[in-house]
Image (cartoon, rainbow, N blue to C red):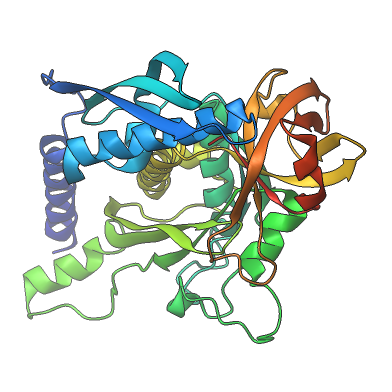
Length: 388
């Protein structure tokens, strides 16, 4: 009897391995003809008080709106922004005119001239006890840390790992953040302000449960053999929720759930760190690594198109100091738009003040001059600086 059971187990192991090979997805990407659409439009804005740089920014925004109207709802404003180039510009009757060309295609990734700053926080588990004490404890901080590393390697982001910080006191309620104080900025805004981040990455491990081995449906020889098989070949669900919040307003900009199933040796030994070769070599580590890659790709694709933003550090004489530097890929001669942030009401429309022309880029900050020095009195530390 013992020999028959062992033979049965061996046959099933071979069968499962064969199924795994058969069901593995084809990693080769078929060649797909991507259709593109070229749109040429104009934008214009009046030149007030001789502020040509500001009028140019406003004319560009007008052109982006015109492209969006003509393109319809198929493309987001961020994708349109990353696909649009100025081909001509002129001034007539104190009005700034721009002609832009937008080449829109599905799946196009923006090549932003600036890096976006993002801070990563820990991914707590929703259900306690799903990761045993004999397994690696690096998932909570390792998953966001590895996502941050991938985003930084893409060249479009500057990352700060604060994975020991948890945004959610109730992970099961995520992405809802329970504010116990009620009289101060949310923890998302506080995190962004502390580290000068434009975005805050967070998430939860929604599920990492191993299928129970205690209950086997049926009776007899096959049920007994199946119960013995569970000691060698288990099944484990993997579900990770990923969120990205706006650092200025605290608004939730990205939310997605990534799921998969692991069959086989589902345990990840203690001491294995996320991203290591030993981790990726385990069935569960391999699946988690795939989900990390997919989530990082989605975040990079979406937020590389977002306008770059920073804040004003101080105003001194006719100089404006901003919290962006060479690491952000800022260069002398760049022009950034300044908005006066309405204190205590960041979600409301901010007042457009003018344009800063960057004069000097240092290791920790940059210095610029306002196009019109009379507008300097309106700028205060903490005001918003954006690329458009």
